[in-house]
Length: 295
Image: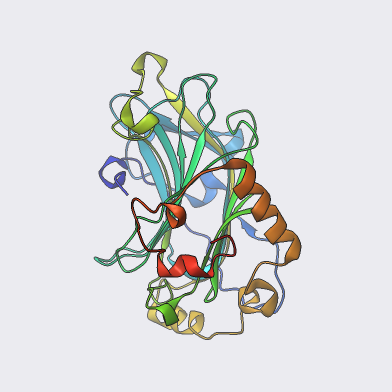
């Protein structure tokens, strides 16, 4: 992702758990002010309601973001976010997991801003072994700048699922048997950022950021972690012990019937781009897409 050099205000989280339950638990709610410490550019990070909320601020001088202190190998991660309102063309709000290696793994939510009255676009992507170019884009069925909504990732040895308010919008299956790399051995940190990407984000870069509308503010009401902390070699060994975490159980190895129906609903009504069906870009269907029930 191109926001790396633009992350100028990193927050550090300190609450990490190894979950060894056989059934899912409620995610761990991590208060911002108590568990995060800004490293610099503190004027672009605003704590609200005693630290239970945080605002990230973007102006023409700087963007900002935060990262977890711990790194994780599998689990469930979510953010409740209210996007930048009004004229947000050129602005990107991102929530993603990423390893810090040359051939990195990464799982992305990117929310592409809009001109006033136009819908936000949610772009998702998956990098494995340093290879990305797996973009999918949808319109949301609500205005994400009006209220907080929950954006979640489920990541285990079998699948990666993107959720919006518990509605699955994308699934990426483990297709190592087809020669496709899958993120299974590189722990990832959790990131979120607010940055300027007007060279590509809105109508391919045609709509530039209107800095007279700055500052742009993205709001966060909570951050949840229910993942395996792999920050140390000892904890990473625990994370590699398959079958003991709730997300390894059979119920989470694939979507169920109602979830697939919701996914189909999103695809039919709201999908505007899917790399799996882009024959101009990929004359042959990418191997991982052959497991997609719509392909």
